[in-house]
Image 1 (tube, rainbow, N blue to C red):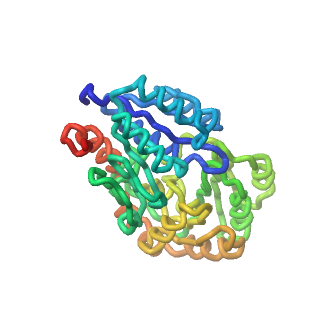
Image 2 (tube, rainbow, N blue to C red):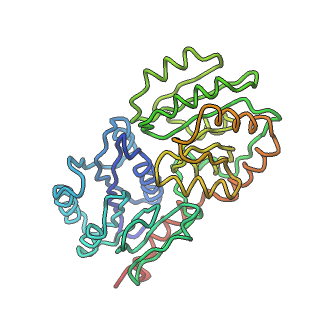
Image 3 (cartoon, rainbow, N blue to C red):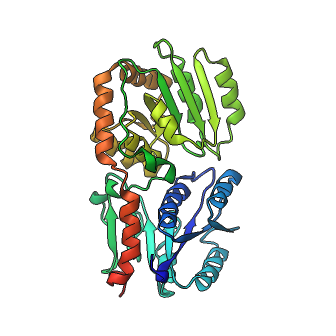
Length: 355
């Protein structure tokens, strides 16, 4: 890697309300950059001790943000870091970073990558707009003439632990019995509890469930009590560090419609999706249309009975699971990190980011 742009300055937050998806996909980008000899600095308001510890353990510097944008303290801190790292890319991932924030970064002379989901801003000043979602190509982005859009599942960011699973082949049993439940880092409305209760209605013998509870989940004790009382085998895991192995172990997943969907697709795990926030709506719908997942829609409109019904059908239909697994692998080939890292490394030298 050229010494000209060795650093990524990553500005992303994580907490109970917004979840951990923004920070985790930035981690995947930082890992890809690091694997080619670069370094990354995370400037973050992160409420999770375990997440901050993970970033630190992987060799990334952390600059804590006490008050996030639009508080003026946010920009004051970032502008200070931009001066410390004059030869760096800046990465923004968060819905609160508006066009004004982007323009201020560009005015410092730094190239800018914005990771986006919904084209929700009036305008984007970034050199690269990255949207890894299935519907990204249908969105209308208002950008600068120099902006390069990287859109679609060719650019899905996968964390380092998933890289060795490229090319892995899933065995699909006649009847599925192993279920993975993962509803995000926070799950503020405790939909995990609803899913556990729905599993209790499923009439498949030998059912076994692994429930992954994220680092920002505040309902752990309640979930532990429910797991102890369940009439089927339940494993409750907090802050799971082996998600690829858990996804490979499972026959079926019940998941939120966020970034985890791309990991499930890459591993070829047939999934039932609940939409837990607005930014998950199009992801779940797109995966449903591509027949890579079953989209239950908004969690507020789902019930124990519906989860039971859809899950029971999926557990007993091997042909459907084979088809969904194949569709997922077709969507996410696992090479998105390499494509993005290479583009970051070469774009500035080719003049695409100059204006």
